[in-house]
Image (cartoon, rainbow, N blue to C red):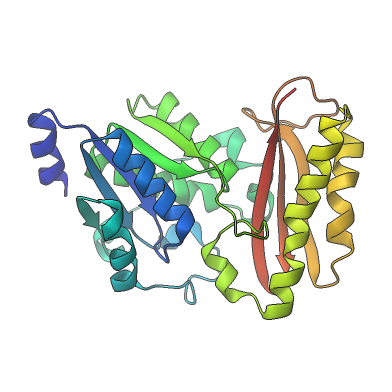
Length: 272
């Protein structure tokens, strides 16, 4: 992969990469189409990264369908798919990790310690191997995008990081590979996340700027869904992820909610 990427670079070609863990859905395909429009060559990576899963998380049952993923991806115009295995990505004795200190701590970092060190490490390795000029990530994983942007800035990667807006189902549910875990009733109750975000956005559009009241609007639909259990619903500065009491600059209303046994993420950026 590295040799091929170096060859393309010597030929003066612009490379875009879309890192994924596979189980592709329309959100991933949107990233690939955006990459196709921005570069001469598009590299899709598929790798279920073990270092970003905790010991009690769903690594073993995470959906895998490499052949199906490639069938979905090919019509978007990808030029290369890089699908390494864990043994090649983490050779025996590997002990080096990348951490993005403060940005890893809040939100998902509270309930998934070590998760973002795994993310930052594997993304840095994928960047070294694919040698991109630009990389595309979905904004549904807002904290992940913030961590990667800071890593790229702090470590002088020289790669443009582009976030792409959340792709939703027609009823508003944010697309996610983990949606496949939901039962029919859980799928219905999962809509509480997007409804909560919409309620908070409506209050914000009406002039509300107090974090406490915006959060109350977001929480009400989730509280009414009996199969839901909140991990966090928080209002944070959109760049630093620091807590906010009054909205005077762009913020992210971010949430992680368990619906049954499935942990779902969603968010909405609010800009004064």
